[in-house]
Image (tube, rainbow, N blue to C red; front, top):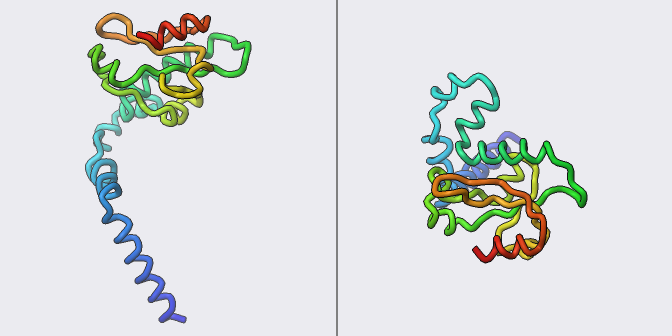
Length: 156
């Protein structure tokens, strides 16, 4: 029985070694576990959970919380809001500081629990809110009131 456990231990250690020697998992361990972007000692100063989340996730988390607070003050007729995200190339072209890329819809759903779609999504017609650029340095969150407005946003 002891021999069988020892063999299972060796097989599992060997399997984990192979698993974490692949390139994507090695990158993940180096980036998030061994060398995190936000040192844990810096996070000790932030005692509030929301402060720590904003510090760790940065502008993306702040944008998500802004969208959630805005949407909490409105009522919806037909289901929940679906947010239209601008393409990342468009954001880079506009030069919005701190927002070279927006997160994937799944990440926004993780932060605030709301559905989002890209401009290339087949569900783009369901979008009833949009994130747009506002001037050279900012972003705005606006409701989409008509299909014409949606198509005008998609053309820009």
